[in-house]
Image (cartoon, rainbow over all chains, first blue to last red; front, side, top):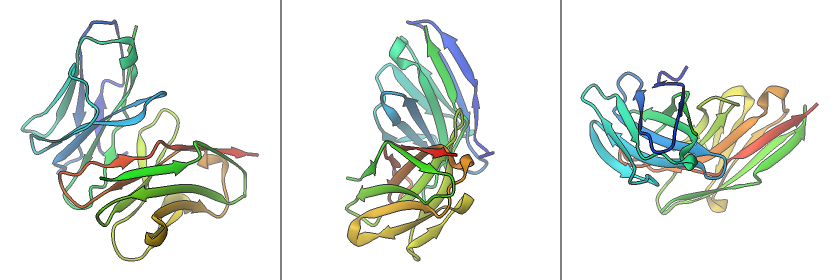
Length: 112
Length: 114
């Protein structure tokens, strides 16, 4: 158990819909990262937040957004969903220092 | 800019044989290097990491990796493969900064033959 929690574990929705994925980092970790893992794209970094502020951006679509709240949990919002958004979405957290990231179990999103 | 290349998307070895998963990196600053493992339907788990100091790093489950600056490599090895080692392995690079993201390789799927 990494100490990072993600909800929900599975999510099935339809094209055009909007969903919110939630992540709670390990106690004391200030950084939260979001990743998308799919068969054709592999593991893609989406975005990083550090203590409530956006710090780094990767291959995140404009239809996707994220935020980190004062209690340090984070949410990833996916809107106007397309079939190709079906993937595993991972959250990771890290403390200061060596950037070792601890991954949550992931949310499997299926868009029908 | 930093990047990671994992040679071989799929490696198959016999149980008891040596495991060697290759990783080469590119970094303009001293890198921090990681190997993560992902078992089916699970998240990524840190196997080992190199930050500074000893270049031979030992990790969990009998794995180790050696940082070779001259070869820009960080290959993962295990002397004797076990069936439970079957998983996807990711090499990753970053640098020391709270604003740095980790760059992951494309992954190598390790299969173990009985």
